[in-house]
Length: 328
Length: 275
Image (cartoon, rainbow over all chains, first blue to last red):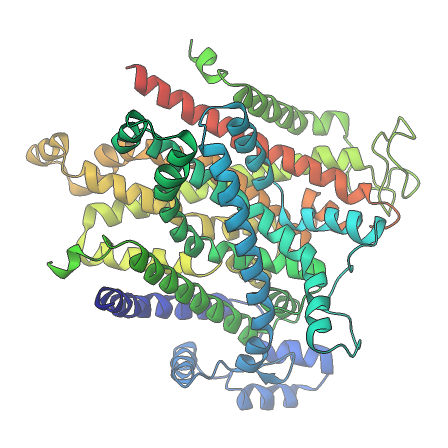
């Protein structure tokens, strides 16, 4: 436990400069945008030059960029992510409202790709070089080549338009008045297609990593020793090969979290799921600078937290991690 | 000899065949379809295989789907190659500088790399395109912005191991300038593992470009496969082929890049193995 603590402390300290760079970077990027929040507001509401000036002043947009960055950093320290122009609400509360939907989508998709990918990876890796191994490898590559948004559309055409088995879009049936278990079931039915389209694509990552890891373990001496002792193939596959190849896959869970967060932008927009990704798209459309910065920041924090959790899980599972640092 | 090694597996052959078709489409697009692919070619919503002048039918506005497919291949391939070249160039220079300089420079550059890897790449590209405005050049920059980190990390790791080799020490002894050593002695030797990554980067760039176009952030003056898919969404119930056809082209193109890339890496590995 001490080991995990040390790791956690080191990682937390290490993530501070990274976050700072993210903040400054996104601030600079959005400073470069032609037109500011007032322009966007006036374009939708209307107003004269005097009102524009007054608005700029009241929103603090007339100060110098450095002052604005300093003010922004100071506000961030107080967990104030600014005010969304398009929605006229604090950014943090808007983002936090949408976050659970994205987490649910990401979590389910990650679980699907991890378990299915690992299982198929074991099937492929139990006989490296065999026909089924090559079929699975090429098949997974083909899946990895599929754009998520297109897969989502095709699944919609088949299961929602043609077969009418599953709902077309949304997170749950609007104004259905469902509560408790029937509401959970309703949300689950709505999430089948989004989760499948997001999860199927990343399945290939786990499959290929598991397969490559197993192919490597097959060549190791202890596998040869196990075979020499006459242990059955099935037992070698499960107890010796798959088990040893499984551990590195845990790191992949953290590494692909950023990619999956990015992928959820398009998936959420295809299925009209009110999550973080769709919010980003809405912010882009409304030129809502504070909101877009807020989303980028929150997703960066999310990625850091996920990687931290994965690192701790890895350290708990693998006693070798961090053991050498105790002496160093 | 080396060609035979390259075409050793059926997967690699399929990959190169697809890439060949793609290049052919790019080269033949202006010959076969000299008209603007965004112009109206016939009656709207013509189904595929009905009229042989328009073999894949027309979209909602009566634009030729096959012409769009050919011209879209140009956009996809151009963006994919340009973004991959840019990210490999930027990434390997940054990685080389970080690995060779070491110390504070290394620390600073690696924290910046961390930051770029922490922000979801697609959100970053989305933000840049929406800020600067959609054009082909901006899309390339936006994609490279999130793709240079991989090459940078690999280049740095290579440089760290090459830095200590004898020929680098002798270059130092004969009084070569450190910058010259970094870019003439070390970088060329650090490149092969970075280049092995290039097919993955090209494929990812093609997919990102498609996703950006799908969300309406592609170059509006060019046909893109992602844009065609988005366009077909409006008539998904009555004419699903409009979204399905460009998607199949996209899948095949990306798969071709993957398979060909794996073929090259594998043939390089066997060459090393035989030597």
